[in-house]
Image (cartoon, rainbow, N blue to C red; front, side, top):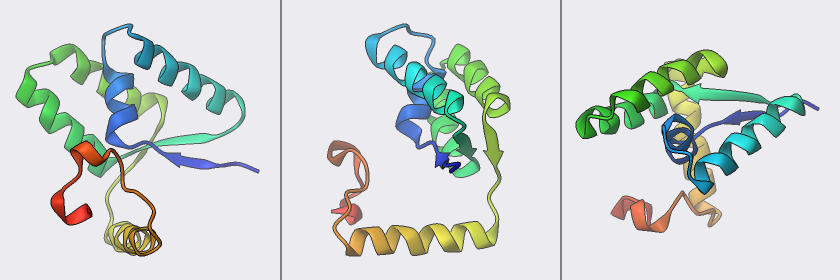
Length: 112
């Protein structure tokens, strides 16, 4: 069974980092294993936007080049109205069932 995996800003940020730290190496290994297992990884356009604006603000040109490369390595998932409506539905469903939404230290107050 093929799994479709949408990358969030944290793993995508690590993958676009020019650093060779332990977290970067771990996520790189995870993505290689996922691809080798036949999984399909996606860069959602909304996540590209969120990460890119922070990389631009921080002036990390190398990370931006790496992010652009990842958009060709993985599948790019453009924003569409049906996708945004489905994302809102999935997020609401997850939240109403107590599923945490990312790192609690980085969450919007509305996500608590």
